Length: 279
Image 1 (cartoon, rainbow, N blue to C red):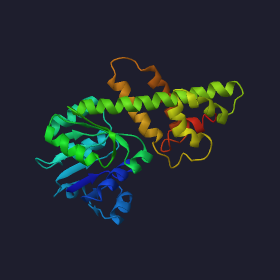
Image 2 (image 1 turned 90 degrees about the vertical axis):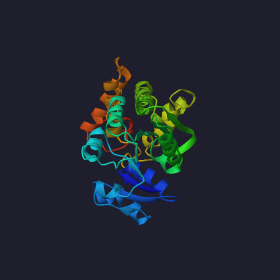
Image 3 (image 1 turned 180 degrees about the horizontal axis):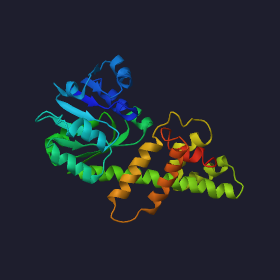
Image 4 (image 1 turned 90 degrees about the horizontal axis):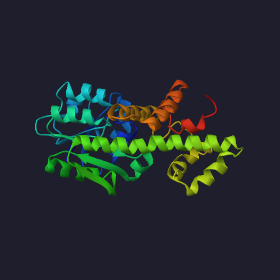
C-alpha cells in the first residue's frame, strides 16, 4: 500500500520502519533530519504533510500530543476523503471522540510499550473504530508492530484511548511504587542492588526488571526508551479523564515534574530512580 507516515520521532520511526518491508512509505517530520534514517532505508521524504498524503491510500500519524494533531491534521483538513487515518498518538477519550467526529475515517490505534518492544515488533496495540472494514485494515497493518496476543480491536476510538491510559497508569504508578521501595529499603541501610534482588518475587518485578539497568548504571537515561515528558503528559491526561481523584497518579506526576525541573524531561523516565537523591 501507499502509506503516508507523519511523525518520525523515537516511537514513530520504529513503527514506520516495520512497514517499509511491505509498503511504499512517504514520511514527514517537522525536523526533516529525524526522518533521514528512514529515507536511507527506502522511504520517500515529503516537504509538507499535504505532500505526504497527496497519493496515500492510508495515513498514519505518530505525533506528540493532541495539539500537534489539531495543527497538522484537523485544522488544515489534511485527510483526503475516504482515506483511512490511523492515529497512534496518545490522546484522552474525549479528544479521540473529537477527532472521530471531525474525520469519519479516523481509527485510533495507540501502542503499548517502549522502544525495545517496538523494535522487536512486540508492542501492544488497541485499534478502535466502529467501522469494521477500517478496523480490519488497521489491525492488518498493526500486526507489524504487535505481539500477536496484544493486538486488540475495540468498537470506538475513545475505548482505545482509555486502554492506552490504563496501560500507562500501570506504568506510572508502578514506577512510583519502585521508587518508594528504593526509598524504604535505603532507609534501612540496604543498597540498590540488594533491594532490586529482593523485589524479584514481588509485584514490582516487572518495573524492576525493565528499569533495573538504569538504576545500577548499566544504561544511561539519555537516550532512553520512554521520556519523563511523555509519561508526565500521559499521566496528566489520566487526571483530566478520571471522574475521581487518582492519588497514586498525582504522586507519580510530582516525581516527573521534579525531573523536568532538574532538566531531565527528555530523558528516560527512569530518571526518577537514577536521580532520586539529587533533587
